[in-house]
Each structure stands twice: as C-alpha cells, then as structure tokens.
Image 1 (tube, helix red, strand yellow):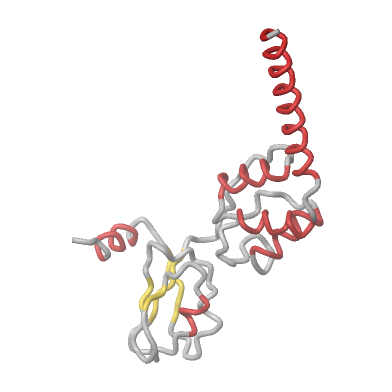
Image 2 (image 1 turned 90 degrees about the vertical axis):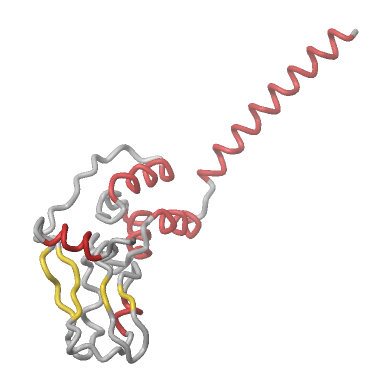
Length: 179
C-alpha cells in the first residue's frame, strides 16, 4: 500500500512539473506588445545616443519589436546586449560587428567660455559632465561616450569634441587617478 502511494506521488509530481514548464514557456509567447517593448528597452543601455539610427533607446526597442530590425545596431550595448535580446526574443543569432566610428572622440569644455548653465549636464545620458549652476563644468573622460548630445543645448558653444587618440588616453588616465 505504501509503495502505491509513493508511486502515485512521484507520478503526480512529474505531471505537475511538466505542466508548470509548459505554462512558463507559454507565458513568453503571451507577452503583450507593450510588455515586450518594455523588456527590450530595459535591456538597452539607455544612453539615448542615437548611434543605432533611432532617436533613443525606446524608439529602437519599438522598431525591434514592430519592424523586426536587427538587434546589433547598439554600439554602447555591444555583443552582451545582442545576446540578451536574442534570448528575450528567441531570435536567431546575429553576429555582432562593432560599428566603425569615423573617429573616437570625447567632449571638452572650454573653461573660459563656460557660463555654468547646466544644460549640458541635463543632456548627458551617462553623467559624464560634472558641475553646478553658475560654476565651471568638466567632462569625466572615462565616462564620455562621444555621443555629442551635450553640444546642441550649450548656449555659448563652449563644448568641442576632441579625438581620443592613443596619445590622449594615457593623459586622461593620469589626470583622473584617485590617490
């Protein structure tokens, strides 16, 4: 009698486990369009740089879901983001090829011209600009992605993009060492 109860319990647990795994697989397919867009947007780096060809991460997420655009258009997200998107959406693998930038650049603020308006700080999606109102602002080169979103809001055009060359990189690293 005990053996029959044990066998019945094992069979019941196996059936229950199979039913739960089927319902989990079905939930992924039952995700609404808005939930899918939100999930894709959450995986994107939120730099709002526009390097993908869309005006921000949310429009790119909408295009991925609605227009089936390639998953590998986000340079800041890189191959890691592509793999996460593939897993989320169940798409075939896209080989990630990093886009060739015309030149890698970082922003530089002219100290003599900056009026401390903070418009560039609000525009920077990666918090690479520090400063406060009516004070000099500065770029943290290690954080600057070169997206150029800080350029348009500057009322005095004190921000320029400088090439990030192998000669500049050691200077940047030496300047911002923490003792």
